[in-house]
Length: 259
Length: 118
Image (cartoon, rainbow over all chains, first blue to last red; front, side, top):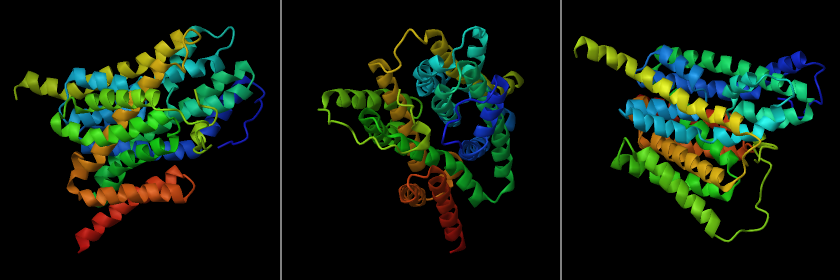
């Protein structure tokens, strides 16, 4: 991981290669382990490996993929799955809006933006938000495309690896693989908890999620999101603001990514 | 199950993934289309973020406390212990996510294995 952002790479092609190189470090390790967990989850849900690969290929953004597999296991309807995935991934809209000014360059055909927007997910997005502002405009989209392509390919590979490992390893070890995802996201959220509204949303959601699941396995998740999320949002608006929240420059993923 | 029903059942998860993929890409494409015209830091998006965070926190808590699939065979206390250990290691190692995850998942494996030996 390059902590000191390079100023320029010489050419758009070199920028794309640098993006590929940069993704092949800590991001790949952490995300790869998570996708091993996803492959394992797919196996545990009784689905086949192609379904897991198809999901990573088309709907690449791990939280939504986990929501989908979990709701499938519970027998969720098409409407519930579509709504839950859409709500999980709605955050991709503001993320894309925030990133686009750093990718635009005169003369780039619009379809390229639409194509590479598929790579907007936390890891590649955070890297591009950190590095692209320091690059000349013509190198920014190539850097992001290079970073995302390698990361995506690796996620496809680890989805398959996780799926087959689950069948090969002894049962108590595969439990650890399936356990990777909830633990990983729990820590990602704890690391990312800087805005008070979001911290409240995490706490309220975690408290309401399990009981509402018992009320309705189908709708419990959606109700948790809308109810707990709105309560947290409202509380954040109403409660008095403290000056200068202790915004620790903590997790590496969030540098310069505030909004 | 009759033949058409079996076929429909086999394609059902793929249909879900297609719909899920569209529900995912929709936001990205909309983001490209709207960039420069809307404010990514607006209150609407803060509410959207709160809903997504609450939903995922609810899902994660549910996956740890009331899992389905293979994790359902483990003891609740063991899963909660694994989560607590992951948090402890995360904070002790200056917020290292990789080490926290490895410790939490490793702890669940070892505890479950230990119980099987007893």
